[in-house]
Amino acid sequence: MKKLIFLLLFYVVSFTGFGQTEIDVLHTLKFNRVLHILKSSYVDSVNIEKSVEDAIIGMLEKLDPHSVYLTKEEAKKANEPLEGSFEGIGIQFQIIRDTIYVISTISGGPSELVGVMAGDQIVSIDGKDFTGSKINNSVVMETLRGKKGTKVVVGIYRYPLQEILDFEIIRDVIPIYSLDASFMVDSVTGYIKLNRFSRTTLDEFNDALAGLQKQNIKNLILDLRNNSGGYLMSAVNLADQFFESDKLIVYTKGLNAMEERYKSSNKGGFKTGKLIILVDESSASASEIVAGAVQDWDRGLIIGRRTFGKGLVQKPFTMSDGSLVRLTTARYYTPTGRSIQKPYDDDKKKYIQELSSRLEKGELIEPDSISFPDSLLFNTSAERVVYGGGGIMPDIFVPVDTASLAKYYTDVLRKNIVNMFISDYMRDNRKKLSGKFNSVAKFKKDFDNYDNNFMEAFFSYAEENGVEKQEIDDVTYIYLHTILKSHIARNIFDSSAFFQVIMDVSDEVQKAIEVIYKDEYFEKISYK
Picture 1: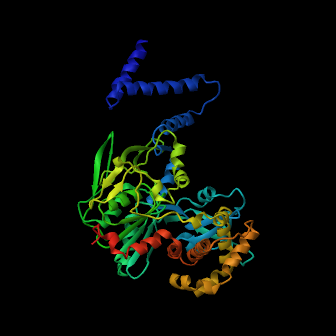
Picture 2 (picture 1 turned 120 degrees about the horizontal axis):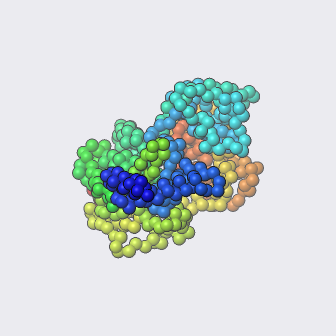
């Protein structure tokens, strides 16, 4: 007993010396005691490592929706899109009819260098058949990715050849781009689309902006729709591009975290000129920081729908085995003091499904379905009213496009008909299309003349694959036609071409183009 008392006192003195209280030490000892009992007395064998991980996961599940535990492997995969690169063969692929189709190759990447082409079908890897129902995105990525310098042999079927072509590919570092598109909408208005905020985002944005400035850009549409966020500093650095110096961009604070305030410098590349930011219900975190700062300082206009409402700061705490706890340590606040985070409780499922409930309540169709109490009203620098309570409410609301919800359109998407049709269409027409259209503008203008039976061919193809033709209105017809054209443009050119075509049926982009030429919308904001 004396030895036990001495040991307990030793633990208390040792741990309290590292900032833990006696209660903390007792909790630690209690947890260790339970593990010891499990190991020594439980009826069956126990995987202690898994039990510890389950306990950690259980603790975090009782906190907020964004505090999580990640194994070493999960942490590596989660960080890849934000770090800006991974190691692999450099292709964008899609699984269609249990087969891997190459959508495009990364420019300068190992697959392009050995002659892999868009439209190729990967049917074997290292001599083993790689088709069938067991093939999924995770399996493909795990197999094709690998350390730089390692070799993989992919067997490719290339229409109309009747033999399998083997390509020996040496894996390399492959960049992951956070910028999807950059182009001029017209002679003075540029468009930039970002899909995340990674370590390379600022460099990518500055390169794109420099290219647009050579084309005499005066107005900018920044598209942050479906951008779920990323690094805080990437958001701060991007927002910095739009402000004069010493403007508060965002601040963070928490119970155990000192308040940190992030202000603009004088390095902005687009400090003047009309600015519009597009957002939707999937714009989150870092996207909301940028949109909130621009709105609060009246630097530009926000167009779209209320953003997701993710305003919690996660800090990674790495464990000795490489796993990590991504713990919420603070909240984001916009310059006016609005908390970006939407309410949450113990029901994480309800929190995740909140976007679906917005649709059910009509919020994605009609902004009047949203009510804000007076306590959530804030004023911008120009005394415009903005709202707190979670997410960023846009200055100009654009409802979700009902054509995208039409039954026929959702049916062909759900059954993967669009991707299957485009894959087969490009197989038969790629060479002719590439030879005929040398620019996206020419493709947009003349494609319908190239193939005026295009839509009838699609409807017949869909019917052959289980989706009967239905009566659809003109709006849905045009929407579907443009979606298909967008996919073809991406196959011929690049991802930027996809957005250049699809913008014609994007209500948010079209509204931005309309608004940007009406000075009355900008009278109260400091864009000059």
